Every structure is written in C-alpha cells, then in structure tokens.
Length: 469
Image (tube, rainbow, N blue to C red; front, side):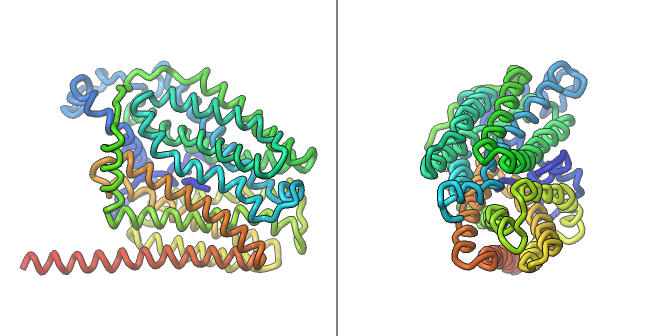
C-alpha cells in the first residue's frame, strides 16, 4: 500500500523522508534527512570505501575532488530519469489490480476477500523480500539488482492478463511483488552512492515522484481501459507501460562508479535485525507505520466495490479516477515537517490519526461528495502519519540504518497486505461499515502505541532525574 510508503510529485518525497523525531523541521529539512537516511543504505559498503573516498570526505575534501554526479554533470539527468522510470514501473505494477477488484470478482465469481489477495499477495511478498534483497544488493550491486527485478516483474506482468483462474492470478501477483522488492531495496542506496549530497534531494525527489505517479497512473489506466475492453486489457496496458519504463531504465541508467561489493553474512544481518527489533522506539515506529497502512490498504482495496454498487453505481473508469485523491498526500506529506516543528512528533501523529478517524466516519455517508471528502481526510491523515513515522526511523537507529529502513518498509507493506485482506473480509461480512470498523481499530492501535511511547518517555525522564540527584 502502500505502502508503501508508502504518491504523486517531487514534494511527495517527504512521505518517505527521514527526520529527527524531536527537533523542529520544515518540509525541506524532511527531504534533506531523507537523503541522509537513504544514504545510510550503503552503510555496509562505507568501510570498504573509506580508504579511498571516505577519509577525504570526512576531512572536508574540496568539492572538485568529489567524482560523484551533480546537476549539469554527464550522467546526472540520465540517472534521475532512469530512477523515475523505475519508480513508475514498480508502483504501476504493484497495485495494478486494486482498481479492478470488482471486475476480477465478477470474472471469477469470487468474493471481495478472495479477489483482494491479488493485491495483498503482491504487497505481502514485497514486504517479505525487501530485507533479503537489500542484503543481496550489497553483494551484487544496486544497478544489477534493479535491472533483474524489473526484468522479472515485467515478464510476469505479461503473463498476468492470461491467468486462467483466480488462484493462478494470485500466484503470479505474489511473484511479481517479490521481484519488485529489489527496486525499493536498492534505488535509494544507488543514488546515495552515485550522487553528491547537495544534488541528492532532487534525485530522490524525482524517484519518489515516479513512485507516486506510477501508483496513481496504474490505477487510472487500468480503470479506463477495463471500462472499454475488460480487466484483462487493463492489466495488459499496465504491463506494456512497465515494459516501456523498464527499457527506458536500462537504456538510461549509467554504470555504477562508486559501488564496492560487500558480502554480508546472514549471521551479521540477523544480529543487526535482532538489535533493531529489541529497540522499543523502533518497534513502536514500525507498528505505527504498519497500522496506518492497514487503514489505507483496507479503504482503497474495498472502495471500488462500494462505489460500483448501489447507491453510487459508478462505472469502472470513474472508480479508477478516484485514486486522484492520492494527490492530497503530496500536500499533507509536505505539511508533516512543519507540523512536527510546531507540535512535536507525537502531536503531529495525534493530528494525523484524528484526521484519518474523521475521514473514516465521514465515509459512512451515502452521499458521494461526503464519501469523497472522507477519502480526502483519510488520505491526508495517512500520508502525514506515514511521513512522521518513517522519518523518525533513521535517527533512532544509531547503527545498521539500512536494515532499520528495510524493516520499516517490510512493516509498511505488511500492513498494506493485512489491511487489504481484513478490509475485504469485513466488507463481505458487514458492508462498508465493517471495513470502517477495521480502520478504526487500526487507528486506536496507533493512538495506543503513541500514548505508550509518551508514557515510556516520561518514566525514562523521571528515572534520569532521580539518577542525577
């Protein structure tokens, strides 16, 4: 789901940015911290490069000695456009069936909960594969990993429209999600290694814009094509779009010049992961990201069913256009930085969760304008909450930041998978009210986790004061 992230323009880069949990920040700060966060994905390779480049940078080496790419340098525009194309292909494919679920249900005589696995299977497989593929990219290279991931995902995309039954479709979608995990596992690290820090913000922004545009355009394209020629044609159209993007990526992406292969043993990786999972604050941030994405996954997996049924009875193309609401996330993501600066991290989370809850309740109305207003609030609250939670992960993790970020992505997409499935089951059992109930339970979970964090912080502060006395 989301998200992952996690959605529609370069300003949406803030949704996946990494900011200091407590220090004041602006939207620009959020993007700068995102660059630092994702640069940490190359952490394991830093030690191998320290003898040649790291020491010079640490000592404040002169800018001309930095051979990484910058705006105006040969290859910078090619790299940025290549990662933009990779982002479009990845997220167009990942959620390609979401807008088509009512049509898939009709075609195979399946319930909403059964058809939802065509989305949940993809996001769940991606969640499981992000961490191991991130480790493999340290060994075989980011460029090679992304190329292989897109090639496999595009090949599967050409088979998806031919699925003879729902079970085959779900299996193909899960394979597609597993393959696509190599892109988010490698892209940010590749940029951090090949682009100068001052230019990194723009490069990351274009990649995240590709994610946003891909996720939105994939749903729009499938919706309108399916209305004219059927859901299989809609999936074929997204597959062809992904082919074009994958070819563009391979043609444009420059060779890696600053990557050093580092073989990370499974024991070392497991030790790092265990350390992160033993950190209470990191675990709370992972839970918050997963719970926010549970709401989002439930709502957007099921909304197509509600809007194609009475009293709305909207055509497939119009239902696909509903995903234009994602553009609201651009605004709320950018605002998240200012909110944290004014209200603190917990205050921003409370505002985000309140906005999401208000949207869920408003969406219960049987009037289309009110339902759309509810979707706007849900989307705004989700993106703001996701931005706040994800941006806190890197500063909380003092070591192994690459793995800390990968764990957040895993939790995020696992939330999308669980939310989509539970939301569809609840819709089948109790209609839209059941889906809203799932969302509200997840909202209560976010509030509970945040309150527990506040309590833990107060207890720790009291203990610190007593120890000082």
